[in-house]
Image (cartoon, rainbow, N blue to C red; front, side):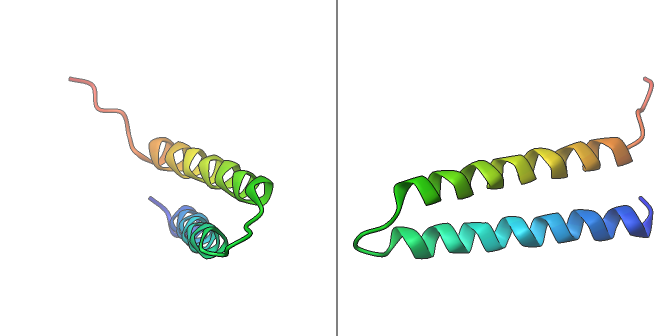
Amino acid sequence: MNDTLREEIDALKAEHRRLDEEIVSLSSEPLYDQLEIARLKRRKLQLKDQIQLLVDRSTPDIIA
């Protein structure tokens, strides 16, 4: 895996963690915005899919 790809994956993972922290923070408030939390969760899932796509693309196929 090249350095550029590794940096991109690391940046996406950092954003994923930040969103997770934001969701936990918003959920702990007495009157939290359910729509905002749903939007953040959707974005988090998109990031997870994007990370997995990049990891899969960087892993060579092994022919058995």
